[in-house]
Image 1 (cartoon, helix red, strand yellow):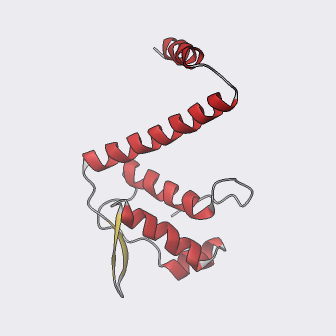
Image 2 (cartoon, helix red, strand yellow; image 1 turned 180 degrees about the vertical axis):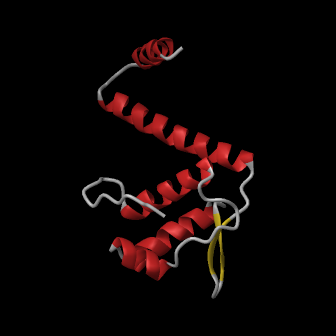
Length: 125
């Protein structure tokens, strides 16, 4: 598995790991039942803390993307299309909230924000 980790990114390393594994599951390069590397093996290969990898795997398990069999390893869970869609929508909502927070810090009014959204929607039709 090829994961790109940026130590200079503002995104925590465990999030970088989790988001890239999610992406591989969504695109189908990781399929239901596929094993993930062991926590220690992943940590050694990518030169990160085992606790960081464990945190990423725990997050993915919470979200339903993987399941862990004690003593055997962590495997890609059977993912329904709805689960993937819900995850994508959750990520989109988070990004919209961050954009709204930034707009509020810039003292934009509701109408200015809506106008910006309308303009962007027109651009991408």
